[in-house]
Image (cartoon, rainbow, N blue to C red):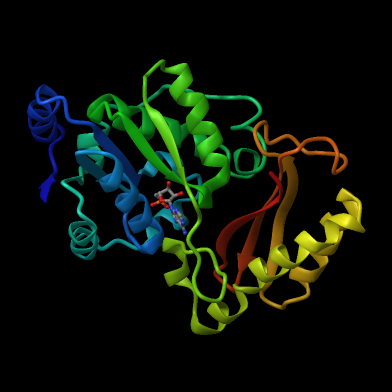
Length: 283
Ligand code: AMP
């Protein structure tokens, strides 16, 4: 496995890969890697001759400075994990390398980038689109791998790839959970041990709520999920939206679509740490 800090060095290497008509998979990450990231990398290794993983903590997608400052980083550990997963190349550029000049491009893809996380974290998806489009231009992958953990991000990236008109297949990978159901996330390591005990309650309630769709309306189920999670001291729901799986627009009743997903963001603990999760109700 080769590790590059300079974009041009990776591009030189990929020039030869492409000459041999080998297929390239890209896995964009922000580092502090765990089994969720590893599952994406393994899938790419299975489906492509060459897998590139980017490890770049992208400042333009953080609307909250303190969130960026406390985000965990450990490139050495990341590289060990990536090597074990069979990755071929790691791109780990500095911020100056990735953004030699300020990126002033604005991306907005209504409604996918404007609802939920888009509304609560202004500028977040703009930053995601800035960095993902740069990575796409740099690597020109055949396939790019994204986790369903960030449900809304996949919908936004699909719009982005159409918009920039690149022939890249967006591969959606299933969410990986801890044994107790908590969605794996780099931010989990910021939880104290007490907070870590509370966090699985989010998925416990979401999973339980699948049984309620036969007896409760969308609004009633929404209210019950909110109340059940908020009952746990130390957990506070920011939003819970029950949406159509493609447009991400709210559904008014269970028959509105054959594809319905509940997306949630919960603040956990004193700091607090912001955790996201989702559950598929239909489809
Ligand atoms: P991040 O480093 O948080 O930007 O994540 C990089 C990629 O890994 C994104 O496509 C995420 O959706 C994906 N990912 C993160 N956590 C998980 C997880 N628990 N299961 C599946 N994919 C994940």
